[in-house]
Image 1 (cartoon, rainbow, N blue to C red):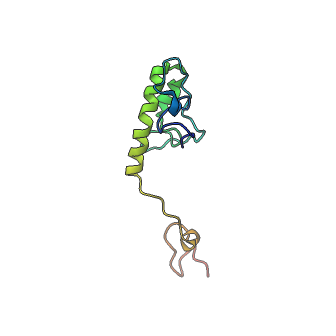
Image 2: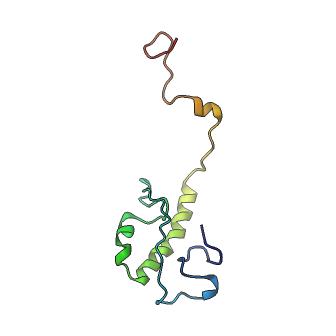
Length: 111
């Protein structure tokens, strides 16, 4: 989600009215405290960085941090194209137990 006045894909320190971001502008971390790695993509579900990018962030110079930021919107678009939308479950689906239903007369079947 973008902060008001910030172009999509720009680091939080860049504002729409700032023009090009200069080398002296500090680049904030894209972390949004949703730290779960997606096994299929290898990216954090919150910030869309790889484990290597997350681990190296503190050592990266401003230019390298901006390079990471530049990859985040294309990753977000890629994930949006490859992931099917999540459909809400109906009440019946929520109440249905997972796995096969035991047959009557078999062990584990109530009644």
